[in-house]
Length: 464
Image (tube, rainbow, N blue to C red; front, side):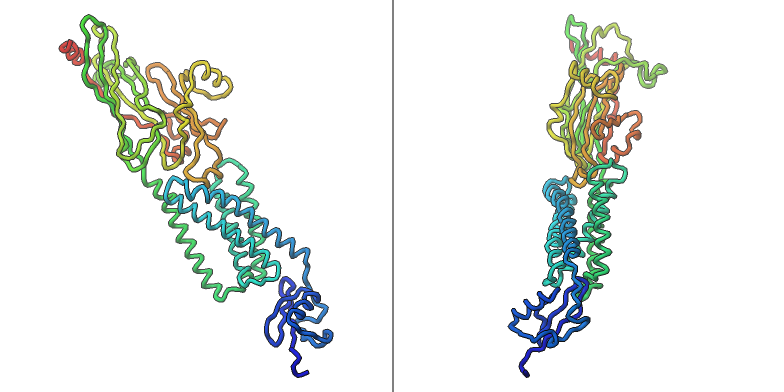
């Protein structure tokens, strides 16, 4: 009898597990008398009834485990972790390789790491609501719940002012589920496996704040500090008048240059050549000028203008019956319509999307809100600079209209969700301030070139 092992069964924990010790050595955890017998059999220990066992925190009848309730909670936790990991994997895989900025790719890698943590938490949930063989399973589950809560909060914050989408529902569901789970884990003291939980918590909080500050600096501060600087203008060059001809040919040099640090897409371009009084004349009123020629000078549309690059073109305009005109001067002016390349992606199909004539007229009948006197239009779906913005903002569409409205043909740009047109009016650009701030959408009016008309005629006669 002196060699009979001493068997003791500890008090039940929050999940109904009771520690089984043989000669003060932990050999397993039991949830029922059947589990206890299996543990003793594996250890090769035979006891004569329950009286040879030392019971702590309750006798042999105290087995508080509720397997149905416990397994239900465990499955709900696993489902929540997997539901969180799916969108995180989608966002992380896309942004880690395709985000437009370096900070966006770092954010994608961070999101991907969070998705892997959610999978680890799902595996740990099986152990935590099972036998709890892994010491840190509770810590892993707690970390997964905190990540899910942060993800839900971020989704909802990013959708403030946006349309209600499926990801709004996901964000609400994650916040509710993770909040309830967090309260339950705090009651269970899930961090009990850690030796210094306060130190680790402080370290995690500091690391999170530093990472958040770095991402905010790269994703929010830098993109808004770095602004595009686009320079455009026109210049009159030689003129010619062929012998016996009633047409004056004038060459105009048009150019646009990206003098800033941000690449841009050129959605469309426009130049006007007008004839009329000189600028310092008393008759120099807006309606006193006659349109001689207009057109686009940057082709193809949708071209990328990187920092330091310049696009230039010489166009030859014709002035009929030049001897009969009473112009004091002719002037040329340019305007380009740009959008920041570091905030959105535009497919190459944009330049091939132009339609006019009967197709445009039929489309204008089906869709409401087309500008009057529209001659041509381009349209394309666009994506945001990162996948996280795509899932929170939803699909976006860019439409560019070329409008012929008399002496000043213009371009109208619309960036908005499909079937929800918000016209970008160059005369009132702040009417669509949201998209201006979001995508850096703006018209860039170039410098005006003006030259005396009689001087052009004299040069043309001299070269005749």
